[in-house]
Length: 458
Image 1 (cartoon, one colour):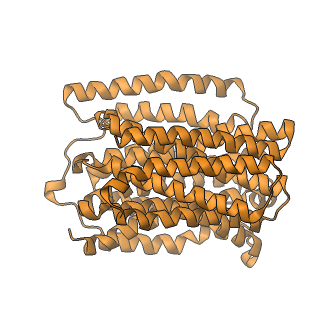
Image 2 (cartoon, rainbow, N blue to C red):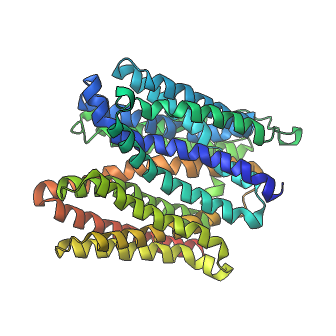
Image 3 (spheres, rainbow, N blue to C red):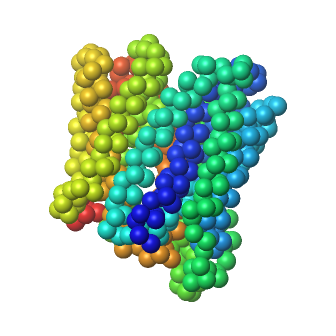
């Protein structure tokens, strides 16, 4: 399919990725308004936020595999429909329990949408033009998350028709209807040659769901609820559950039957190192979204507008790297990933040093955030391109599912680790020390990512 015809397809699936990311970010901003209008306590608000993440993280890989069985067009359009109906239910939720259930349904619809994104890029773009589409994908991930926080704050502040937080969900309804209609029009129907006869690996789905739930639920709720015994037990249980899942999938591959995930696709050294590097920098990015808002607003008593603007600067730096990457020479592309991670490392280290030195200059912070965002864009785009290189069409759903699942997992793990570091140091030594310590930890993670990226491109 020529790139000119594939452009609308890529634009549609990226729009699905964007609204899914934005919706998750918006709810974080709207949580105080939800609590005030529904008399919801901290635990209920936490569940309102994490129900979406848990559902999407659990279902992303099964949704990617289901897309190869039922067809990418059907799964994407179906996911948009579920997401839209769930948004409607959220907007009219009479109580917090209904809202939590609708948020989980939203997450399921989002999983069906975004699990098809990488597969669609791989299937409908020509190899020589794929870097351009992947650059657009990585830019969408960054810009949509920041835009969601800014838009959410604006909608809640405006209190449209006195509905407080409800418009943040209701706005999805006309958008979703339009997106579903466009998707059905521009995404081709599956041909007879693309038909996959194999069904879904039910045992693999069950084991993967158990693993993710046992890992994600305690990480998202454990600290807020003071680590009850059940959360520790679940976290420990996630390790043997993962081992059981890997053993199950390897048995499928040994027998020549269709596994839920083709593990051999990710055991190749180049992809294994690349995945590790990408996970590390994403951990720092999603943690930064959490930490810098707390540091600027609670620590330095800046306004929400200043906090949002700082994240916008990061996103602009990130976005500028995407269009630049396809123009690089092959030699420069191979160096872009480790170089980007080193730029992130330097930016994080400079933020730690200037914070400890008491240099709370807004312009300097903005420049460092822009540099960090640019480095993040370089390593994200280059590594995504590296991971997708040489993947056959029948394995594209495996890649799509795993890479998509990394996004919510990175958010959960990042906030649970780096976010906890910030909160603990802040409690004992104040927000300046907390932010400096966290930026120092970010710098170490980025340096490790640079090593992994270098090995990936060796």
